[in-house]
Amino acid sequence: MATIIASTGAKSHQLGGAQPQQSLDLPFHSASELKQLFKLIGKTFDAVQLSQGRLQGRFRLANLGSMALIELQTNQHLLLNGERGPDCMSFCLEATGLAEECRLFNIPIARYSLNGFRQGQIESHFQLSANSTIYLAILSTSRFNAFLGHCDSEDIIEQLETNNALQIDPLLHAQLRKKFQHFLECQPLTPQQRRQTTNHLYGSFLEAISNKISSKYLSYTPSPRQRLVREFVSWGFKNTDKDYNLDQISESLFASRRTLIQGTKESFGMGPMEMMKRVRLEQVNWILRSPDARADKRFRTISEIAQHYGFQSRGHFAKAYQQVFAESPSETWLKSANQ
Image (cartoon, rainbow, N blue to C red; front, top):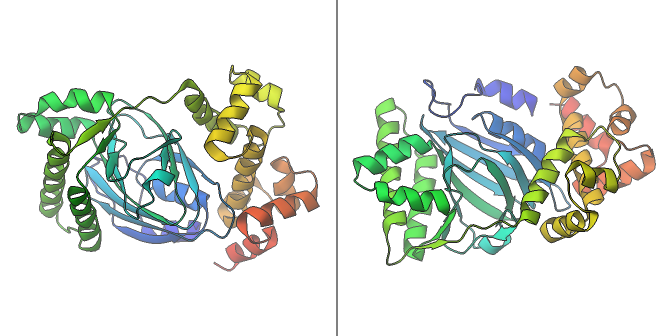
């Protein structure tokens, strides 16, 4: 994966920078590879594969300068967890009819809905369903609000500050999906074309969110337990090389064991210690896939990597790794060596 990224020539800029990213159309075969792709547009998410099996995904990007259009396809259940950064909002739609299996803060998204646009929200905690296609527009809050002001629609901003989802007419939902597909397949090439495309999409989003007859804002009320789960996943990635038990994790998060167990089982179908193991396996998977990451940490063997991330039993580690990724650790290592 490191080789692929290097060959794009892309640098990690925040949206709105002077030089838009070039387009991308790349496969990804691990959640960590998807994480690296998001870094190309300045977005930092931790990513975890929640289901078991070989991951086959596709990441398409059209960067319009002040807006990024993304298509995500995945055959596995994935979690993206992190912070989307300041001055950032998004319009996200699920395109394969699996909306109820995709979740924001463990809240199933509604059919024919736009999601993720709540202004002022920094945190992101999004589950992508297996065999789904997601379209995502990431844009600047301040620029979109300026557009709303230009269109005498500033009154809508209050709704965008308090809501995070909008159910729209199925026909309008299909039209938006087709526009995403079109601009990803026929990407604007000049700065003027990118500005025209951005303004056209701004207008499409405004049409959706201002239609009081066929559009319905949906309440956004993640519970304290759901927010705790997001915090737990972030904590887990920061502490993958440390040996904590459940009591110590609960104490670090100022939560009870019971609340943490209930939250992770509701969100992921597994307890917190199993989820921690999944996060550690994800870290191992990335190191095995990346010769540069191995060199940076001076790992020479698979055993060294496994032990660093808390797997003391080689047999237990190999079995757990095989169950999740449908290949052995040595197979992953060899694939990276042959890139």
